[in-house]
Length: 124
Length: 368
Image (cartoon, rainbow over all chains, first blue to last red; front, side, top):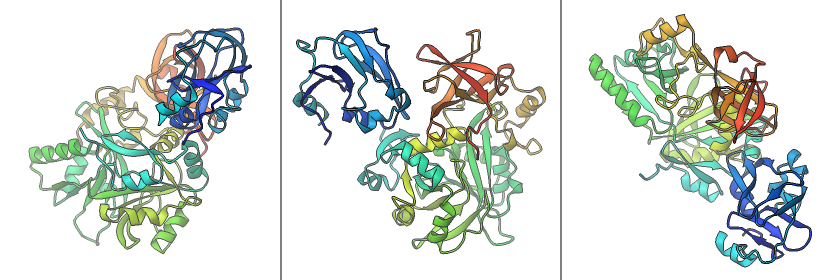
């Protein structure tokens, strides 16, 4: 069984976003398992804007390349630059040290986001 | 159409393998981590199930003549127990497939028997090619598609000689490209010192009925890691080895052996389909060459990405690419015009619309 923490919300495309500050975005344990060994992450820069439902970057594993989708719209206030040198953190700790972005954004009211329970049902 | 399954498909599934379609077969792509499997082969040993590879046996009085006329290398150079790499070309010299040709071990003076191993999913096409030409030329040879009789495992890595010694109960008395018959787990096998990883290694052919016993004779989570096609791909890309259907393809990527860097497997002093065309290519030279590219910027090159020169003009394309697990650097294979193909030439790989800086190198990417 894959971990799905209750303290965040999810996209069908397997990104998560925290509901408490700082508002962080990453991909789920299920997603990293599907991708396999992550070798490269392409992310926006601090100050860039991301738009809900649109691609904000790319994660590449040895075998596949996948777009990353923004759960909500907002401004990028921080990027996990450690991933550029250690992309394997996405595999090792997808809900922790493998985070990707911090956003200045409003998570409440984003009705398209799934609860942990709804996301669990999707990946079962 | 239903996928063909290797004999140990369910054994691999029980071990947690994930699968991919390859050449019409359902094959394990990884047993947990491509990186871990790749490293095991470079540093210790790993075993791959490559039972999707095709096997065709050719026997009879004209077996040598038939093999000689349908492969680019010189089969008369093979002694019993030898093998050689060869291309199979059409009349224009375009590579249809590449293959290893074994002359099977046999008693002195016995008629040569050949087993050749085309790529996955090519067995029907190749057995038809062999029988059609045999009939057209009136040769006396028997061609038998034994793909679903032979399982095939590749035991690769610096520790593989010790593993094979343990499995057969004796030091394998074969050098690179030689094959011998041996008994493993009470199963009669053909063991050859060949592989597709750049490491010392062995390929073991055994009957499907003995496949599980032979596989289990090698697999050991510490000493001989089960590996999938994912690691097989990263290992062969690091060596610059061609992948049929991707680095060449008779219609989508038509290439002759000289362009593809396997001119060493063409013997123009033999008669084979495509020889005259290749003699002209050899005399006139090629327009494009198969090259290695090391990326200097971050990014991963993939099949089909454009290659541009410093002026930004499209000059070629990537046929294979990956992040090298050994080097932790992105590497790629592809074709470039001869004038842009010298080592050190700056070239860009266009990754999702963004030119990433790279330079031409001569494979292999790693010291082997």
